[in-house]
Image 1 (cartoon, rainbow, N blue to C red):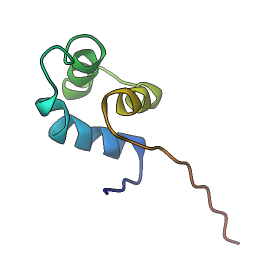
Image 2 (spheres, rainbow, N blue to C red):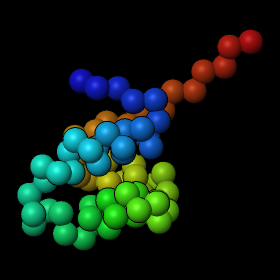
Image 3 (cartoon, rainbow, N blue to C red):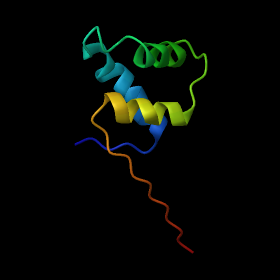
Image 4 (spheres, helix red, strand yellow):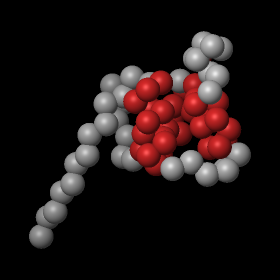
Length: 69
């Protein structure tokens, strides 16, 4: 299990470690467009990163909000 502090951090890891091993037929469409937009800094929203992680990775995303006075 690997934990991340943010969606962009998890997406960066996914781009470098999971995306290259996806089968060629899966790399068509959304994953390759997201890879290109991220790699060439063309803009990718955190929501789209989240959607890609959920659809093409084995991720569970939880939100933890802590207030400590």
